[in-house]
Length: 188
Image (spheres, rainbow, N blue to C red):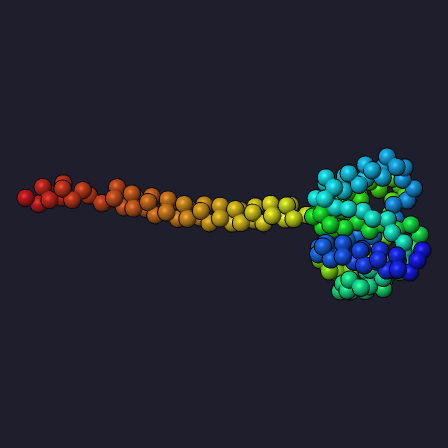
């Protein structure tokens, strides 16, 4: 391939990765049929918020990843670029992408995760695969809302118990003391 074309492809991939600030995932797509490839890409678009997959030459991907400048061991990530490679990026970020890849790897046994970048941190091998087990943004929002509501519910229950106890104590005091009207009549 001509050097100018390789540079253009690398700069185009770098620009695509710049539009995906949350990160990306490197995979070995394995031997997929055309129908499976289309279905996989469709699942990425639908389940990962519009994520895209680009099969790319390893050297071109290496140049684009190093130029992108993520934190961490980028050399360890680019060292995984052997054999067939694809970059999955965009959408809702690397966690939903990892979930789709995990689901597909159950059907496509030769689909493998090589590495990932999540919020600027470079992950390789098992760390990249662990992204699929993490809660995504919607699940985190639900967990946070549940924690806030649970705490508020506990405070409300405690306040209700305190005020209820206070009301019962006042009522008991009223029931124990003689009525003032009756006490005033008896004194006359």
